[in-house]
Length: 291
Image (cartoon, rainbow, N blue to C red; front, side, top):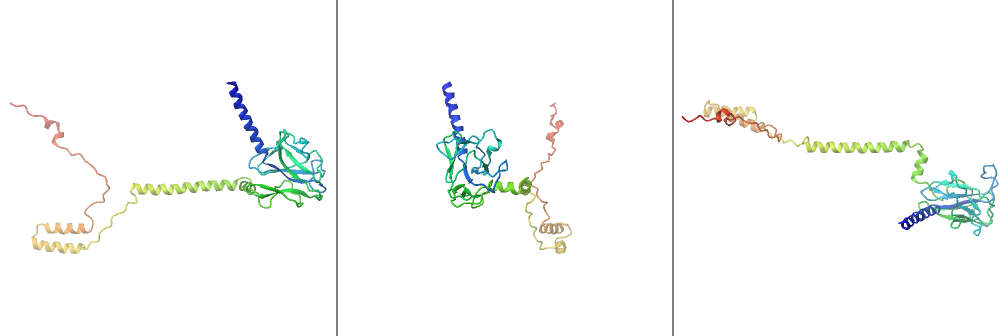
């Protein structure tokens, strides 16, 4: 049992290590300035060489404990301090670092993983790099974040991602243009209310249709005999058949029929009214005794 638990624990730890390594693999050395004469100053107000790390992923990477070196045989030349909150680099963000060793022209700078062995990234510094100019990597594909080292010296851009195009994602653009989220909130609420209004209209129409409110009314037939004609027919029948009221009833019936006034509008509801009969009278059910 203990052996099985140790095996599971080893698998979990190996997965955690590989996940951390995968996050660190998203880091690149994106820019280096060797001779900083008039550019960026450090916390002491001095112009010192610097390099820049870029997180190319969509997640946060903790780069504390990684190493920087210009000699692969000495991979732990400078360790990025641990326990610093600023060492957590957000998605598509960059950070400027001043290594604890001299950066020389013609050398190669390596970024080493926390294990002190694995090379995460490297950048070659041209031997003829002018003062106050940088060597940098440019994002050739903004979606895949494929970077390429440019051979031509460039004007330094510390704190900004280097790209030939726009590397700003949709979320980053919204965060920049709407920092307080007011537009996003208003848009979301409007979409929700519009959807609810559409649903209300649909269900209202469907309810009226199924309840029979929009039932198609039958068209009334046009009478070809008006009241005067019916009266004339009644008088003619009266003269012919006598004064027994039969002719008047026939004429009235014809008039009502042609005016579509014979029947009321059907409501499709059948009402059954109980009728009293002698069978419901108990006293009628008693038989008189035979004498």
